[in-house]
Image (cartoon, rainbow, N blue to C red; front, side):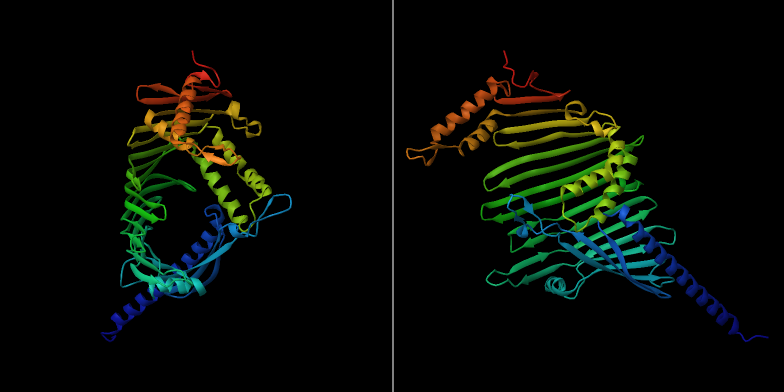
Length: 470
């Protein structure tokens, strides 16, 4: 007869053994998936990624990955040779190391397969700068939970900051007030839902102020590199004080909607700003709505992979003509497949209200050729049109500003600026000349123009370019 404690003890030992074994299996699977993801990174990520180390334990693991970013050549180091050609220095490469702390197996703080805490590993000067702002806190931390049912959720955090940074030499220090970032995301299968909130930034006590920012996403992955759904963001306000004055925007919204219909993508991006201000000049109700339509879904997926793969291979190399030709050769098959559907780019609405009245613009460009890009010609393969409707007073203002820049030779050949009367006369003559040539139609206090490009011919307001209206 066994002792009464034997069965509970045996059960505990078996449970512990199962927990250790499960944790080991999960840890091994996570390592395999991370290595596979890095191997596939060139198809999905335009910068090189490599695994620096992976130390797997029974209940936890530690990994480091290096991401290399190409910032291009230093503008201050560009020189000109004897033939007047720019000589580019080597591109600046910035390596960024991410530290991944992975816990896997049974946990007391939540039911999940694993948790991955991702932070940026900083060294040297970057570490010193980060500590001045964030102290011992992590500047950015991304926590990812892998659910038992296959779902993935996570949280992005950046702590609040109120710090005064010392200046370099005689330069004044900076005061940074940063309210931090909090973001959440959930992935179920190919469906991604996320949100991000940044309460605000104040730099140098009002020199640059950014009001609360909020972003929401609801997206579905339908092919490699192709997401459909909605991204919405709002900025309460943004302002900047500089030597020229104060620039400010308020009530800013940026939204993007992408849908797939029978293998073709249509994406609409809209930006709306309630008010823009530069010193005493104000513009209200500004809106920009852009549409990309008739883009083949699979072709766009192939194009995304081709561009990412080429970009990762070319990192650090100067952007010369040979590199451009190599890139075009790499993406040509995907471009040809996308061209077969005759894609469209349109600005459906660009409008704002100025003190002189409301301006409205719309335009569209469409590829109307076939999939053979070797015989591409703008005259036969591109169609475009545009319309502008604006207050005459706004046209006069722009022409006056342009005329104010004109100079005439003085008595001794020195440049002399025009008088206010001469500026007004020149602006008026330029407007009347545009009307006489048929470039501009004036009706009352409104001016308009319509441009169309078809089969290599350009017409303005229904007349071939250069034709004089009756």
